[in-house]
Image (cartoon, rainbow, N blue to C red; front, side, top):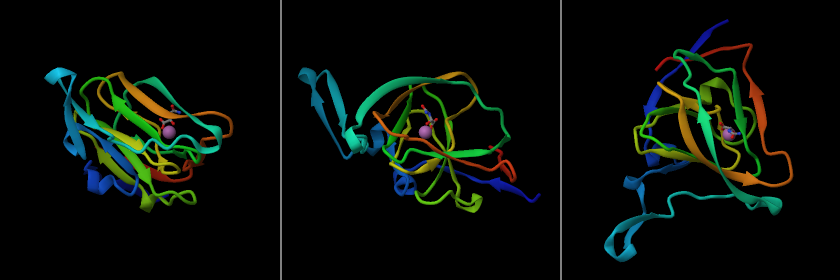
Length: 167
Ligand SMILES: NC(=O)N[C@@H](O)C(=O)O
Ligand code: NI
């Protein structure tokens, strides 16, 4: 079985644009001062697309255990009815593996990004992604995605392939 190693890219707004949004202060299209000058609001950072078919936005916290590297990738998933955003609640780096919406992706179409502290991501509706990959320590992530009726998680399996993420 041929081994396929994924290379890791830095997460930037431009590179991630086909897959969704980068959530971070530096990428804010607009920001403005609020609260009598005591705070700055970095505004409208991601397209939250969760109202399909009577859906509603839900906000949760996911406590993700660190995944040892190198990591063998065996599954990708997508949420056909809505976007999904993850923002770490403490400064950390994590890995984001994505592929464009459509049929189950070939491993050659996987893209892997490493975040830096201060970055979160919002997967656009239907974007394939690996379940959260926390590194180093147990990490809490704020998650915002779609609540409501209807199946909203398709999975694709790669157990018959050797797809590895090394750093
Ligand atoms: N389901 C959930 O909360 N998380 C996954 O969808 C994921 O992308 O990690
Ligand atoms: Ni997901």
